[in-house]
Length: 221
Image (tube, one colour):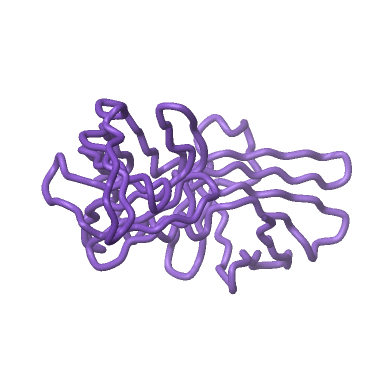
């Protein structure tokens, strides 16, 4: 059983379409310590792992949770499962399906055979920017107004604002446009939504309102 771990797999170049999800199966489970003997752990062979890189969640044979610390660098993708910190050895195959390695600890390693699903409309660089900006933001600097903005890593958002006795909600899609986050309301957000589009300037991790109303959305942990 691996409750948390690290995975490494092949990743495309910055201009490549982003990987949306990975579906993997354990093909070998040696448990090794570098420069020491390995013991067999082949009871996990055939078990399935799925990784949703848009929602940043995973499903393992015995648990599920959030994906964190996702990075792409020099043709490789790495990320953490759960809150553990584990050693990762960069030794992967090529092609689709391809070989990946999941480490639960220095003593536990699973060799996985994976297939990937891609989003041809979003590059890996754009997907990485989404993951960097995703989070729960709160408005400050506007008197008598409360507002929250949830940017999801899959490109969807939820926005709410309260001003006096008036409450407004908008949902839709968001994307990075130059140095700003662009919110686009989805059809059905209301007969007269608060906005069809809202542009928020990115400023050191915060999102700034422009125009007559000044304020900033700051991300909270």
